[in-house]
Amino acid sequence: MESAFPRPKEPLPNTGNLWHLWSTVLRSLAILAALAATALCSEAADLIVDEFNYTSDAEARAAWRSSSLNPDVAMGEGEPWGERVMLLPCPFTADVPRAYWDRDVVLDLTDHHAIALEIFVPDPGAIQYFTLYLRVSDGWYFNSFSLPDTGWNSIRLPLGDFATSSATVPLEQVEGIRLSPWKGAGIDTTLAVGELRLFTPGILLTEGLYGDHVPAM
Image (tube, rainbow, N blue to C red; front, top):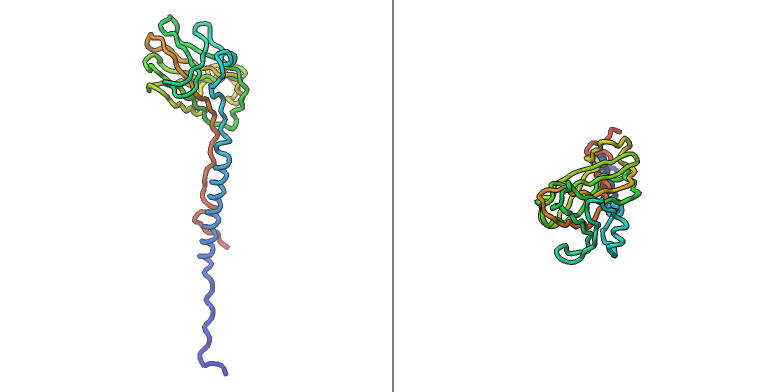
């Protein structure tokens, strides 16, 4: 016999809450995937152009050619640098405006966005500024910066900030690098370089598939 009281109906699921939960899950999965991809490729994507840890003066000089106005590079190790380095002797008691050293390379900068140089400065007053040059097929790109700190300076330069006065091709296929300190005070000094590295942009994390908006159904 049926009860005089009708059986209550099962409540309908709240579809709005379900879609909110689903969008949250999708958003979390997207973030986790991006973090995993970053962990896998961020280090591998960077490119060390030069570690400056040549085994001998002769090997370093074969890679880096000096101008006729300054001495050749040499190698050093231990104090005060704390590691093996390449030395850049700057004879600034002489009547010279700068020193420089060139290296031929084959570099594709298409996927990179910045370049960094580790440089040790014993006498900041001896250096007015330092210019890093990148040579392309028909000219040079350059970026100049100060070296204010005694000891190690970590210089990171966006490639988009490099200027040119002669090149007409984009800063993509690089054929040469020039390191050039410019004379400040008229004293002899010796810089040291520890690493030259190119950086690739990291992965950008975005909102989930729908963000906080649940699409209409």
